[in-house]
Image (cartoon, rainbow, N blue to C red; front, side, top):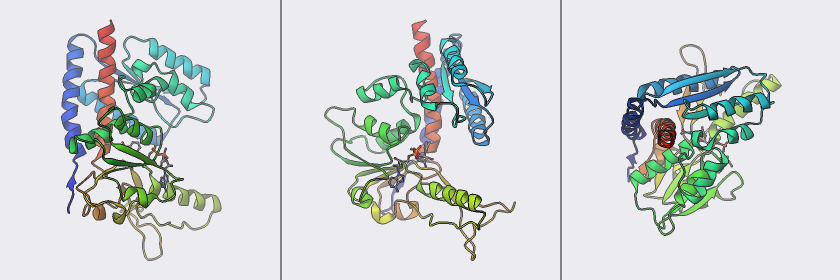
Length: 329
Ligand code: NAD
């Protein structure tokens, strides 16, 4: 069997059009959606994200309002900033850029974002809605992953779904989203680092979600070890967590992971270099894509699967918050 490739870019483009139309309707009513992004300190990785968010927002007619705050801000000062955004009627949604400096408690700040502006769906109220069903915003990646599954396989009743990864941002919300129907939910198994026999679970999955980021964690670990010891970098085995033989014939595979790892190693075991003399990096998921596509019935690529849709879910949530605020005023 050769799998159908689930085209996240195409689904994202379609949804983006709808979001742009909804944003335009709000603008026509004098209520242009506005996403406030809170960035504490300088962080090159966050800068990549905020630039991307700014571009994406602009492309659908959402105002993007980046708040750069000093990296020595205290917890109370940051909570006051969040409170001001919560009470600003011109702000539709608030996103907190991670990571935060060590003096700040990320979770309590995330929770302080008003539920109606919590566009990442990471606060306790929106997480609670996920449990009961309903609510405005659910975590973007989880919604994107489930959306791609539902477009591929609308009837999930009784199917065996296995999720690898149990983070608050991906694995757990995927499980909750899948369990919302009283009579037509799949049977959901959630695996994680302490799961004893991962292959036993994945091999019986009609649907396999994978969100662990194992290869990247190994690569980062090797780099950190080399840096702290001053010894030569030893590239570990970076083969995917999910090999083809761990995928059931005919399964649907949704690979959420984004691993940025070396493209390969030279004869000395050192990472291959690009033409600028830096490590040549590739982006891959947690699944052996080439092997798994010969067994699965459908599979998401990395990149080009869940990632593009995740970004659009953030825009969708921002517009949904703006619509809810407009309806109340
Ligand atoms: P996390 O580090 O918070 O959680 C990792 C999860 O994987 C944990 O539940 C852990 O127990 C599990 N795990 C780790 N090693 C394992 C192993 N050997 N076997 C089984 N389970 C194992 O990570 P996260 O934030 O949930 O992200 C997971 C992956 O998803 C990462 O690759 C991340 O880059 C990617 N991600 C993608 C998007 C997107 O838009 N596509 C968004 C967020 C995260």
